[in-house]
Structures are given as C-alpha cells and as structure tokens.
Image 1 (cartoon, rainbow, N blue to C red):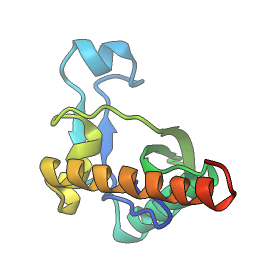
Image 2 (spheres, helix red, strand yellow):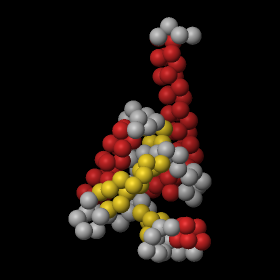
Image 3 (cartoon, rainbow, N blue to C red):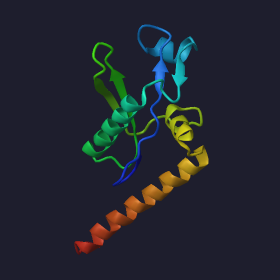
Length: 135
C-alpha cells in the first residue's frame, strides 16, 4: 500500500515456501523459498486482494506505506488477512519495493513518493495544529 488519504495497492506478490511453513529456516537459511511477483492469481482474485488491502490500510488509519499480508484458503478461496506491516523491509531486494517496481515505480521514484507523502501529512498536521489556536 502507498498513500495517505487515497491509498494505492501494488500488484500482489506471493511467497512460495520451501517447507510446509514459511518459518525462519525457510525464510533465511535454506535459500529455497521464492518470491513470485506478481503472484500467480487470476485477475479477479488479485483485485479482491488489492481491495481488502486498501480497506485494511484505511481501517488502521495508516499513512505512507504498509504491506498487507494475506492467506488464501485453498478449500474455498477465502481471503484471510494475516498482518498489516506498517514498516516492512525496505532494501532494494525486499518484497515491498519489488512489488512497487513490478507495479511501475522504481526504487528511487518510490522513495521520492514516500517523502512527498510524509511532507503532505506533516503539512496537514501543521494546519490542524494552527487552526485550533495552538502554537
């Protein structure tokens, strides 16, 4: 997710774990888990996930960025939110910037957009601060 009042969702990605669970071993040690960007989902399901991600972002009054993680239940295709990570990893090789790269924003452009969003949020807070007669 990227935005303040009007958040945007990137393409969804998928972690394909090397083991039954995406545990410490699968994430950091064995080097066999894969990031699939974009996730191998049909268009309708991908859009539903993006819609739920926007709702989650708004529900927790998030600003700037977050990464929403989901499970898709195999038995019925139900979307289950697992986590809303308000400060995901942000190296050029982390899932968050890779998702946005696939969506069309380079790492540098993404950084610039996040700075703009922070400045926008700061200005909005300053306006509230001074409008209420507090200085």
